[in-house]
Image 1 (tube, helix red, strand yellow):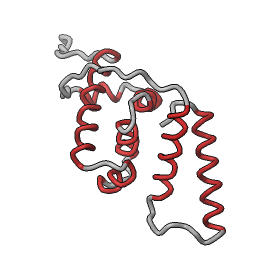
Image 2: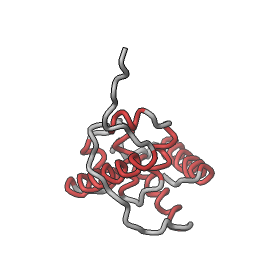
Image 3: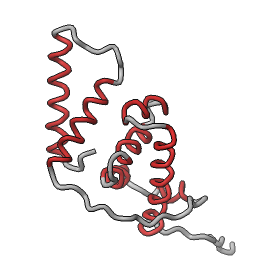
Image 4: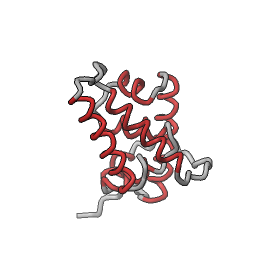
Length: 148
C-alpha cells in the first residue's frame, strides 16, 4: 500500500507491536477487522507524511474479452506495483478486493466506503488497468492458425 518496502515493514512492526501489547493486556477489540483498519490507517498516516503521487487522469479502456489472457502474462509483482501506484482509497479497495480474502461488506468496513463508492473505484480501476494492459501487453485480436 505504501510502495516502499522499508516503510511497509516499519508500519507492520508497529501494528504487530501494538496488537501484542493489546493482547497481553486483554484489550483486543471484538471486531475481527480492527487489525486491518489499524494497519490501513497507519499506512495512510505514513503516506501523508511523505511524498504524494501527482494526481492525474489515467486513460481508461473498455474491458477487453481477452483481458484474462493478457493478465496471465503478468508477473505477480507487476500487478502489485500497479495497485500500489493507485491513489487512496482506490488503492485500498483494489488491494483488499484482489487479496480475495474479504467479503464486500468487510472491504466496505475496512476501507470506510459505501457500496456505490466501492463499485465506482473498482470499475474505474478495471478500465484504467485495461488501458495499462493494452499498452504493456498487447494482444492479437485475430490469431490465425498456420496451415498444416
